[in-house]
Amino acid sequence: MSDGWCPDLLEEKPRSFCKTFWVGLLKFLEATPIIGCLVSLGHAIACRFQSAEVACVWSCLGCFPGLNFWRCANVFWRCCPKGRNAYGKARFSTPDKYYDDWMGHPSHQSKTLTQLCIPGSHDSGTYDSPAQPKIPYLIIGWSKCQVWGAYQQLRTGTRFFDLRINDTKYAGDHKCKPPKKWIMNPRFWVSHTIICVPLKEFLEDIKRFLELDNTKKEVIVCSMRPDKCSFEKDSLEGILDMYVEVFGKDKLIPPSRAFEPIGSLTGEGKQLLLLSEQKKKKWPECEMIEDRGEYEDGSWGATNSDYGPEHRTNLKKWLEEKQPEMGQKKIYNLEATLTPDTNMIVHSILFMKFKPDTFFRVKDAATQANANICRGLAQDWDGLKVNVINYDFVGPHINSGIIARNFTSEGEWEQYAGMCPDCKETYTKGLRFGDPIRKGSGGAKAAWGDEKV
Image 1 (tube, rainbow, N blue to C red):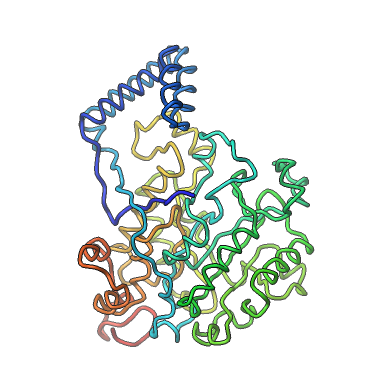
Image 2: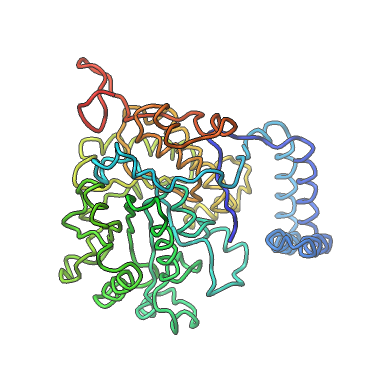
């Protein structure tokens, strides 16, 4: 499993001219027949298999003069000053701070799930694919949305999981059938088309986290939906049985108590809330799992875009529209992703990054989407209630910005985080502390209530 990556807050570093030139020259050679094959072989010898695969594809496409010319023009564009400055390269880092017990802070125990600002991960199980270990790297680039398993995601502060579950018993009814290897054992997978891990493996990771000494006051939401299959009654019964097998029934939060104060739930050892599509109206007897539609409102469709600036505007607009309802009896999930669809992928391939809003992989899209989250946390969302923020490639830097909104001051945040002097600037840069302030004739008021901060 990879150590992972995540962008520092608003930290972008364009490539230097020399580095861009040599990278451009290499890409030019890749698009040249025969020479491109040699470049691909060199990448393979150096164990850069993704680069080898890309070079091989471009070597074949280089046989078509038009495509070769287009590739060469792209190289020159990326080397010129305007082209170089059009693409910031986010600085990535591995975790150096964990947030195991942020919900357990005394000031949070009296709040409900709807009154906290919670980090969430999009397509939470797309960090590995043991069922199909030889998936082409080009396909992985458009499917993989995380690099850490559930345990690592939880340790960096994530408390909301977006789980796409494939019940292989009913996957044959779907036009995209899973590989035969899936169907035998196990039955349930957390998946995203072809990137997948067994559901039980994912749950065991969550259990490992909840068994830590300092995580007894944390609550985790698992929001489930079918992926490339349909959910039937025995699907939900099988999924629920697996949760009970791993955690025991006492860990599960009854839906009727979903929005009680955190301290009230964890005081009785209840730490997992399960939500699912295709449930309540069909099978009300499947207790302990509640309808996503009844308990969760997501922004998908209203916030997705294939253009970074538009995405930033959409995020704020959706939050503004939901302000009257936030903080009540529903989880509001800001799905802050630039998830590629077919049009976006074709658009990206045609323009090959001539335009700043084109991407080559989900990771490229996440760089722009996550930068928009950082800008929102730093300035765009001042005075707005924010509940769950769900994004790709979760990491401690963005999570720290989300978690910090639950603390009333920088001093309180520092006291909790226990940051060393060397880390302080990195983790507090651009953050907003305390419940977002609203200014009006009545003075400054916290967005989550009438108390002053």
